[in-house]
Length: 163
Image 1 (cartoon, rainbow, N blue to C red):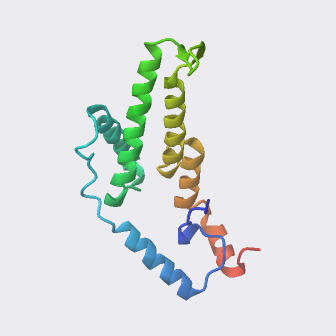
Image 2 (cartoon, rainbow, N blue to C red):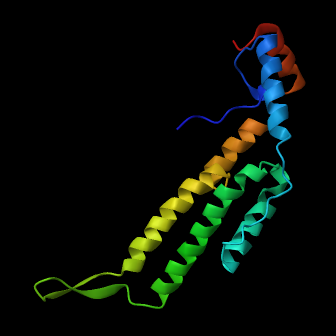
Image 3 (cartoon, rainbow, N blue to C red):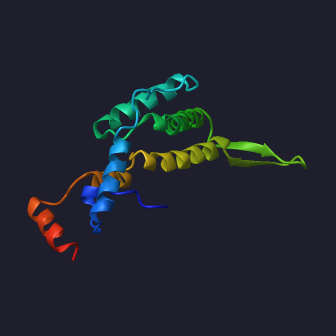
């Protein structure tokens, strides 16, 4: 997995003035991506739409969402919805079921809802990282988007580089 791109102002690597200018222009372009159509799609269930809106509201302060994120966020919301559905089904049915094989013998096996729940859980984890919904991914977003140096440290770094 590729490390997320750091903001130019927090980058520790020495850049030429030309490289800095290019990076700052790229960051400006990313900041100008349209954010006016961040709404849940019609195909999401009622619960999926509610989850979508909750995530958008929680991510509002850090302003990382753009219209381009609607599809991935929709998949995440739908996955959460399906996980909840599998969990409800699992809570209302036994943890094991009887399975009959080809020769007619039966045996007790784990409920298929457990496997479904686990698969959706894995998908949630994968998508949640992209939106900073886990503590570790949130910390990376903070480190990328926050200037942690004091003015003295900035001046020293500008004068002597990253020694």
